Structure formats: structure tokens, C-alpha cells
Length: 93
Image (cartoon, rainbow, N blue to C red):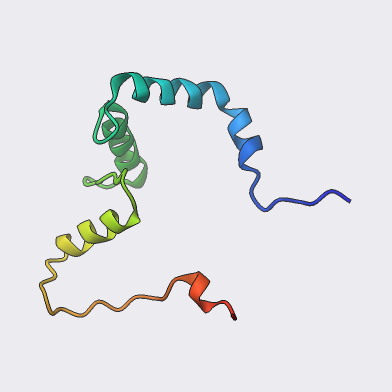
């Protein structure tokens, strides 16, 4: 019996390997890891796809994205933000 993977990232990568490798090499050679030309292009294309004027790509992590969103809302110290717990914390121990 062959296990079925929910998401086969290796197969997906192999289908577009030349494009992914070329894009990664371009970023490595430019050393523009944050807000370089590829990131700017991604933001522009995502904005067109979503039909929105404003897109802020966050290359660092999800925490940065959440902080930017809260700053855009004008939250101040003492304001309450209620979120769901991490999914892993819902698993029985």
C-alpha cells in the first residue's frame, strides 16, 4: 500500500523547478532578500490579482504581518485584541 500525501510539495516543485530555481538564483545573486525587485513585482501582481491598490509583502514572518495589520488599524497600548489559540494547542495532551 502506498501512502497518499495530503500535499506533495516535491511533485509540485518538480513541475516548476526551472522557474523556481531561476528565481531563487536571481534573488541570491542580487542579495536583495527584503523588498528587492522580485518582492516588489510580487506585490504589484498580487494587488492586480486581488483587485486592491495596497499590498504589503511580508518576507520575514507572520508576526510582522500581524503587527503591520494592527498598526494599520491604529491600535494603541491597552487596546484589546482577541484571537484564536494556535491549532496545535487544541490537541489533546
